[in-house]
Amino acid sequence: MDESSPEALKELGNTAAKNQKYEEAILYYTQAIKKDPTNYTLRSNRSFAFLKVQQYYFAMQDAYETIRLNPTWPKGYFRKAEIEYSTQHYLAACESYQKALELKPDDINLLEALNRSKKEIVKDRKADEVIPWLGAGIGIIVGVIIVIADCIFTHKPTHPLLMAFVTIIIAMVGYGIAKTYRYYVKCQRDGLLEPPTDLFKEDEGEESNAAEKESKAHTPRYTKSQARQRYKKGKL
Image (cartoon, rainbow, N blue to C red; front, side):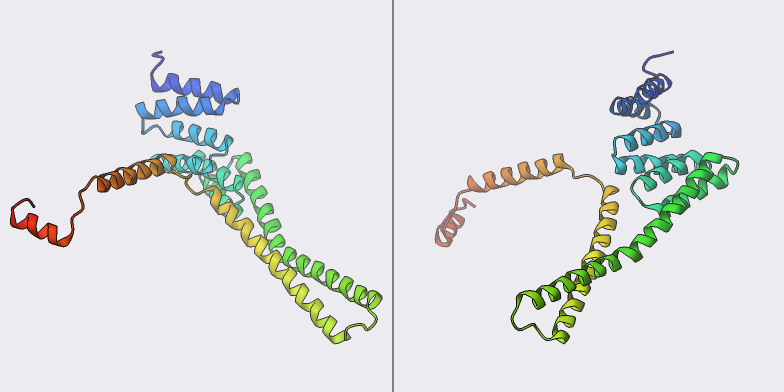
């Protein structure tokens, strides 16, 4: 077999992946894809390798391409589901596992993965419900501690209604902080699937700006009267 053929490069990538050398596997799969861009199994394998090195955006792009090249192949949807599960997008993962299971209904592993995703959805929804109230509970505890401290360490304790109001405010703040935390967690999950910053593009932009500034610096400056005189002499 030709060592530079797509199949040979694929085998090298598979061997590297089995040895957990995922970066090396990505390089082999990438070379093979350049030679055979319509090979959906190469895209699937590279998606798996990207997932293992936590490059979720690139893993997802390969999963999408796998599905595009062969919409009836269940592994493409499985790859997509695995990425979604790893980034805690459990509802989307559940839908992708379901799609793969429709194409291959006798696959026990797919069924187990689907059930696992459903359990995580329940846990996630429960966390959305419980954690804000947990924050409110902590706020109430803090408020009660303040009330007790006020009674013990002050000669003239604050009016009970005012202290009750303070406790309610603290509880509301605790609820809001916990709610904001859950929102932050979900934003972090979405960020895992966003494209990475293109550092080379930024460098190119900085070089272009520097060149433009240098060009402007070397451009001669004239007053309005000097410009009119040069225009009359035909120099502009």
